[in-house]
Image (cartoon, rainbow, N blue to C red; front, side):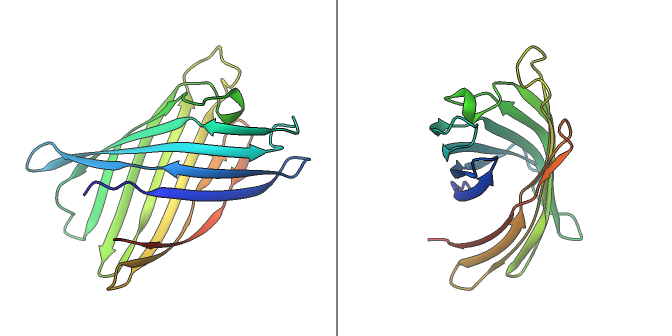
Length: 188
């Protein structure tokens, strides 16, 4: 099933100027059947960003952020216990339209997902780790882990209620970001 979700986020309290950021992540997911046993699943996260007072410049920045492109090799069928899983590479692509909206750096690392679908419930975890690849860039210290545990409940009329955290640990700065997200969506 090809999907094209849009995820809207609002964050505030950045820096000494109490900056704020509006973000829409365009997140197409496209599975491709490789053979009778395996799928290749492409997941892209392309951020559309509008931010105020984030970089100490007292200004506004609007545009495209850096893209994270992930590929998961996943069995067609779940395991006997019902686990659906996939592993593969995650790529950081320097697609930011302005320097203030990205890290101006290529990066790569491993990614994995595991989930269970049990009736109306879906729960699991998505994770990746990305190391920067451009030693000469201003952001050569890119070294970050991402963890997204999630739980979803879908009603018989296709409303979904979800709770997750999109946590990032920046190893270079020894700093966590742990936003908690409540989500309501409707499949039409």
